[in-house]
Length: 431
Image (cartoon, rainbow, N blue to C red; front, side, top):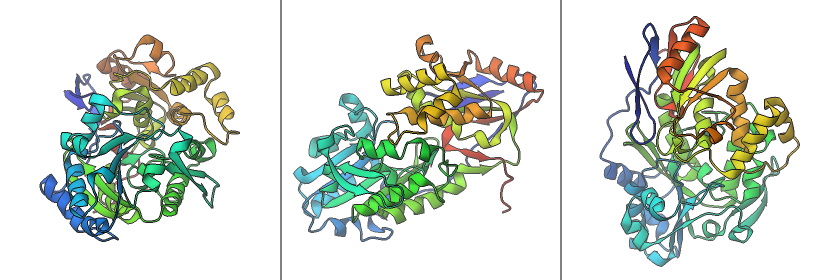
């Protein structure tokens, strides 16, 4: 039996071993959707909790539109031009419109990569498209601290000072913040490094509510909501795509309300009740662009944990064409390998500000506590693999056969979309 996983740009097909009983875990089909341009036009004209975009832009002298960085497959090519044209028609000059890449603490997107990210040469030729740099203190406006947890709040000056503030993004499960998009594009997207490093510290990361698909009492979500409220009026265009990257939903409006509308839509397609756990789970890191580094691959290790039996085997396939990730992440992984999981965690607990990118290593502790992790990543060098802290799978078919034999259980869960699908061990709700 052939199995297809999201992997790199082209996907990955492999043979399932004989005797294995596969349980394919996929999203149910999305309902038929209108043409992408019609979905975007409808969202902008029929907003949630705000006036239409054209009315919001009228009388404004400047605008800043946030877009996610290259790690997210957001369909920017579908909506940036109609949004910008709407702003210009309403009277905002092109010279006063900035598209700002919400990099958080990731590297900037430049040159051909920026062109791919934006997806429309007209946008690059018409308005300024710039990157956020979290480590540049002077680029930020300090807004004080949050009331609940004392997070210092610094936000990119270009966004704070724009008369019309708009975030755009993809709404999908996120392994710490519940769901991506909306408020998350603002913080950490265009936040100062101390803001990001505070709510990525161990006191947030080790909170059991900081998990995928959960917004209830999630400390990251709560801080993000307070931060966007500190900015005054902020709006958002939220998108949902299917496994072929087709647009299936778009909502526009006040940033919190419009984001929650997208979350409500996508929940029924991403949170999948299974009714059991498995000794062997096979998943992916969601393909390009998410699976280009090991750093992003950790997300695919965390989201299926609810269906992995304690002591089970999690096998994940990831392209990792760009290697391990940042130098900061490599340093954290080296410490993990040298110290071991528990000693590594103890070094994190006293910190007010997490070291850059070490929170992803901290999240890797979750699957390491649960069971055995095997990574199929033939493009990852031996030097990079040594700091992953997991086992290498050289052949997916053989790794599955060996795991099933080791556990004495032929039933194997397979999640082709990786972290875009969140399986739950509980039985599905009655229709």
